[in-house]
Every structure is written in C-alpha cells, then in structure tokens.
Amino acid sequence: MLDMWQLLLDLATAGLPERRRAWGSALRAELAAIEPRAERRRFALGGAWAALRSGLPGGAWMLVGGVALAVAGGTFAASRWSLAHGAGGILGFWMTTPSVLLCVVALVAAWRTRSFGSGLRTGALAALAALLAALAVGVPEAIVWADRHAGYLSTGDAVPPTWESAVRDVLRPEFLLAMLVFWTPATALGAGLGRLRRSGRVADDQGGLEGHRAR
Image (cartoon, rainbow, N blue to C red; front, side, top):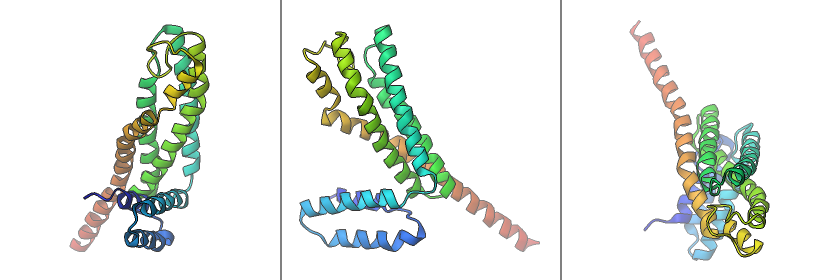
C-alpha cells in the first residue's frame, strides 16, 4: 500500500544541499518510526514545509515572487478581458498559464543546481505562491463578476444569486486541490528537464576522460 506521507517527505527532502542531507535522512527515519496516522500526517507536513524553506537554491525566492506577480497580474487581466468580451470565465487561464510558469521555474532551478530536488522544491513553493496570488485577486474579481451579473468567475456559467456564493465558488476545496494537482506534472517535468544538465555533463566528462586515456 502506498504511504502518501512517506512519499511526500521523500520528495520534499530529495536532493537536499549536502549540509542538509543528514537532517533530511533523520526526518525520513523518524517518520518511519511513527505509527499513528494523525501524527504521521502532522510530522510529514511539517517536515516537508521545513524542507521546502531550507532546501531552496540561491535566487529561488525571486523566482517564486515572479510567479506570484505574474499569476496575480494575469488573473486580473484575464478577468477583465473575459468580462469585456464575454469569454466565459478564467478557468482556462488558471489551469494553463501557471503550469507553464511553474515548469519554467522548476527547470531553471534544477538547471542551475543540477538537482531534481531543488527544482521540485522551488516549483512546489512557487505553486503555493501562485495559488495564493490567484485567490488574492480572484476573490475580489468574483465579487465584481457577481455585481455585473456576469456569472461565476471560474466558468462564467449561472449568475450567482449573491456575492457570497460567487466567492465560495472560487474557494471550493476541490477546486483548489484540482488546480494544484493539475500544476504538479508541469512542475515535475520542468525539474526533470533541468536535471538532464547533470546527466549530459557527466557523459561529456566521461567521454573526455576516456579520450584522454586513449591518448
């Protein structure tokens, strides 16, 4: 049976900087010794969050901030454009544009550090920032859509009876979880592509060494 909390902590602590690797190993070992499900969940979430913050490469916060600003600005622009042109909500923007941004951010972080784990952690933190940015702009925009009788912000369907229902549509847990799940493959893809730099360099180094020996 898949141990989701162990998998989460394994991914969060993968490829930590050398100075933090012993700490990551200790976290994984401690989680393996915990049996109650509630305690495992709390420990895994706390450990993963600590690993995200402490295992970031240099310049990661600039990448994370850039994603947050881009998603916030894009959400506002997409909302107003959809209102003006009757395009029917901004769900498509929320699903696709952050995915592209997260893929690029994870790729850049992994490429610079030659570490899949660094790319994945940077992308994960950027995903959380993107979600908060989308909500920070999306909630007031949902009220604007309700006030103008344009429908729900996400899809543009069915004029919400109150502004409260318009806001609840944006804050639905299943909707937020779906966005994070949708963004995850793009983040992993970016980290994986960035990790290829290390493989390519190792192959080049080995080829050069063999050529030198042949001479």
